Length: 206
Image (cartoon, rainbow, N blue to C red; front, side):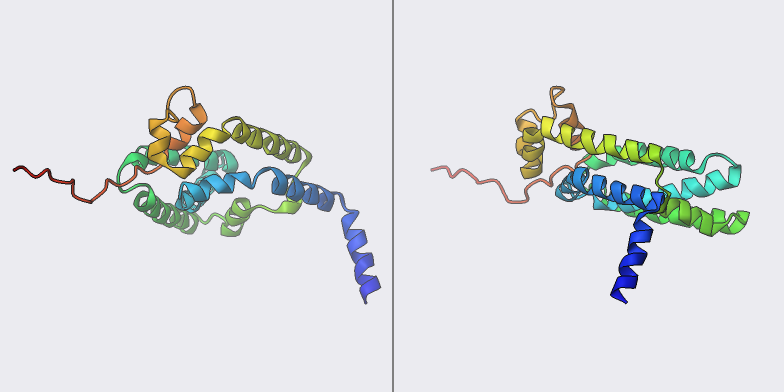
């Protein structure tokens, strides 16, 4: 059985889509995990789920109108991100806004899919994708991102490390200045730290 299984795996690896999928997984695993450091460090994980549901809404609208679903998804995510970005500097941050956006987006997407009769399976397949559908152009784009993203992080590694360590210290050190555009982008999307609730020391008079 093990020999048959090895033979089946060998035949499977000879398929071009499987080879491209393996290369894509390897390239992404090497060059892109650094993005997760910023996502976790800045506590913007709700943004991922909200944008996923907004993308589903864009795909549903694209299938309904006959436009390119992926282009509609990108436009919807860009508009949603631009709309909630100013809320990142408020004391409440993005958690509440992203939760509301996620709920409204998935409700609107399911409503469009139910009312219009659009194939829901097709919409979800476009959202999740398939690693076996990676083409040559996608592979080159992924390889370029795997080089550019770590290069940007290496270029601004000191400012990013300071920003992840302490946001107030990063701002006072000029991390949000025009000289650090990448960190300024991160800072503009970080929730402002809550003011300290400890009472100020009172001076005693004699």
